Length: 544
Ligand code: NA7
Image (cartoon, rainbow, N blue to C red):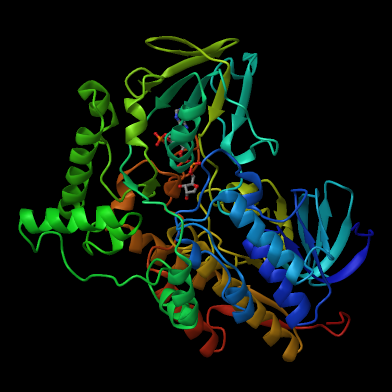
């Protein structure tokens, strides 16, 4: 579909991942608006369209990693594994796109380059890299929290004559590692998922690790259909529990301090949840692993011992043992045979904290300790998280103010959804909302439904704009910041804090109060007459 220039739309949605697909359905099919979606990829999927690296998989259990807005959709889809793998999630999102005919008004291979608010018409003027020029009353971003990849600016980076890939924009045809010497730089989620898979195929694998990680076995398995059928009988209650939870999962959360039990009992509880696998180690063990340094240290020590038991070479094990940050301060990682991979003869671990990478050469990677000749470099080096994708677009609000200037000292939002000075711009899972600290589909559905509720209200009341008040925004930013202060999150150089991007302001970006508390706050805001927002009527000269 091509958009003709000068179209006057009700809404433009940027992105066709989980957020954009559902936003399109809500606005187009439920509210009956004239909507266009712009998407950079050649098809739907967002994160799951781009991140096709080997081993890419979601850390949420599959039955919880989908939409809940349509009971029929929930009943008809069958997941095959405990954790959904990237191809399966992409198939699911394609199914959603087919089922609701969502491609019809989506223009692919098109990136929005600019969106300027026109104060004379109360409309957004949107431009794309394909030359489209449209206007809309409502502008909604579904551009993802982790979609602007970052490859560190190592000296000589572009001189490398072999193949080089970033995990977040992986070739669709895949990469054949057979017989190749491969380097992986980075040991975040993408690194720890891809390293075991690449190791099984490559001739040699060299892993360049800056920070050793705490990672928990996923215990991935095929799912028993009987288990899923049972879940389906109770789907609504399960999802409702997730909506009002902390992390967007339906798990029973224990209210027990790691310091309230003796060492033997603590280890037994850790062991049980470790065997269950995945996030149950965090939610099902103790409630203070992210808030008490001492409690966090007990989990850290448990994992350190697991690493020492798993990795046969004691020197390699010590390099893999995390010591520079507390457990729970970076994204909790879930793996499949990650530490076991270092027992393979074809895998070498290079500690680049003690001997950093000094340059990329035409034939490999040089560190302070030596030169590693490789055929392929995999950059598993992460993303300019949460704000990077906004900064790529020239978004201008009232008075021509650029969003990237408004956010120059860190993102300012009200509810992680709107920005003062940028009327009727809505950000699905924006900075200052639970987003990346939760099971994303749960957070996304709440945002999409809330935005659609706002738009419905504006139209019913003949209102043109809704805009966050600067005071409400300042209070929200302070609240988000305050919530993070007593947590472990403040004690690591993580992408939550922007610390992975040189020069990025060190500000904790997501809301860590939990999806349930956040949902309650949003509902209160609505019930209190859209508290913290100013709603303005349509001027006589401007049709609604
Ligand atoms: P992450 O989690 O940001 O991991 C990136 C990794 O790359 C991490 O190990 C970094 O080390 C490393 N890195 C980043 N920059 C450098 C430089 N300059 N030199 C050496 N090493 C570097 O990204 P992922 O893609 O793995 O995961 C992103 C999220 O996607 C994940 O959390 C899930 O939510 C899904 P560091 O730890 O910063 O020392």
